[in-house]
Image 1 (cartoon, rainbow, N blue to C red):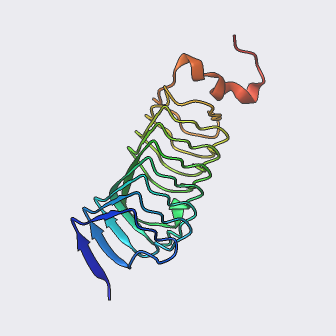
Image 2 (cartoon, rainbow, N blue to C red; image 1 turned 180 degrees about the horizontal axis):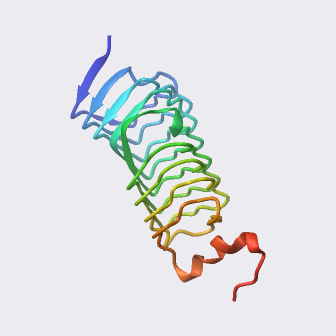
Length: 189
């Protein structure tokens, strides 16, 4: 039987040894919790926040994230494409999302602020209208990705092939134009 948790705060709990109880979590706050290598499959998070949590390598099979915020969390290697996608929405600030995968997801208007997104997979995904503010996108994969109206003006280290991605009305800074021209092997001074 699924349990229901509302307006609760979970602080400093180590869920890497004993998994978070299955259920629905609405308007709950998780701070300083360790979820690394744990199982969050089939758990619903609605309007929840995670702060200073380690969620590296967590099993997200059919987990739901609706209007969830992550702040200064370690989210290494997460496969967000395994989540339940209905009404999926979240924002990230100061998070380490290295090796995370968003493959094939529709995540319009998603906010990434000051995040490490090195080697993240954005292939086949739709990030229309999203913002990547002060984000490191070194070796991130953009393949058939919809980046229309995306703000990448302060993002850095990305390589995006305009021929293999949709970038209409996307915003870039002059400093980042080299990331769009890499395949041409030209020198920009």
